[in-house]
Amino acid sequence: MLIRNAVQKDLPQIMKIYENARSYMRKTGNPTQWSGGYPGEDVIRRDMDEGNFYVCENENRIVGVFTFFMGGDPNYIRIDQGSWHSDAPYGTIHRVASDGSIRGFASICFSFCLEKCSYLRIDTHRDNRPMQKALHKFGFRQCGIVYMEDGTERIAFDFNL
Image (tube, rainbow, N blue to C red; front, side, top):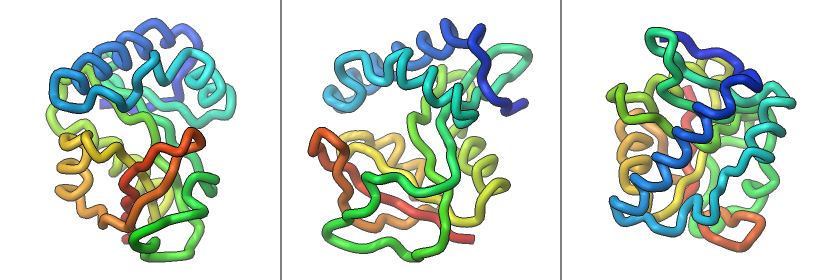
């Protein structure tokens, strides 16, 4: 298993993984997260240009994708119904998706990010039960509610070694 920065030629495979992830979400009771084609190519290209977009390869095939960057997320400034467990500098994880061929991809992603930073933050939709389960299983702690730019709520989690 290899995790590396994505390059432009990966984009078709990346977009297919997100298309399949949106379909899976709809089928499993999460019809609104990533609706409207989110994340689009523009978002992925920006993350790639900033060096923050990663792909996970197994046998030379992309099986999972995610965004990881060091530093704050403006959506994490306000947190309701709780608080972050630390004010330390943190790494932020977003847009985790896989093709479903590798069990435990989320844990692989989280472990990679922990190698870069010992304090992580992430959020997910209240209807994204598979991600919530993966977060709890790995040891993330639920912190409260954060809000996206469009005002939608997300459940906030953090992990501190």
